Image (cartoon, rainbow, N blue to C red):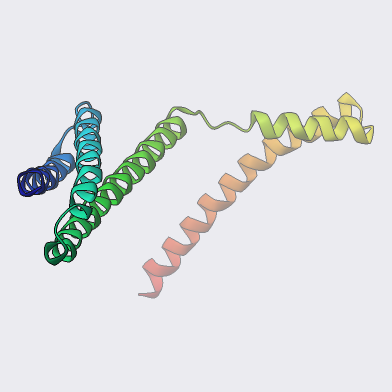
Amino acid sequence: MEALYHQTNKQVHEVQSYMGHLEISDKQSVHLVENEIQARIDRIFSNLERLEILSSKEPANKRQNAKLRVDQLKYDVQHLQSALRNFQHRRYNREQQEKQREELLARTFTANGTHKKILDVANMLGLSNTVMRLIEKRAFQDKYFMIGGMLLSCVVMFLVVQYLT
């Protein structure tokens, strides 16, 4: 039992050191490191099952201490398992955010979708195509009036600041 306990404890420490490698590994090798850690954790769990059986066969005066040591190892391994899951969850969220960011950057934003919806609503209301073209023409002209008004406002503000200060 002692040899298996020390072997399992050594494996726990190896997994802890691999968790450090997980943070610094690149995107391609992170899956390999995660799989290696998970495989080691699975081996540790199988060792813990054998240790539980062996600890129950220990003499009565050593049984309590053996079970306590096995429970401590089990707690450490469960902590490592949850840390691995937490890392995988954070990595998955990061990848999803990067994917969404790339989709947003690749998307071209136009008003065509809104324009089409407005035309559909206007058709449902019974507006003729001629009236809708007049509305579109007016919206196009209004854009130039707005830009001209903004430029005029900027010029007036500049002149006010220039002459009043």
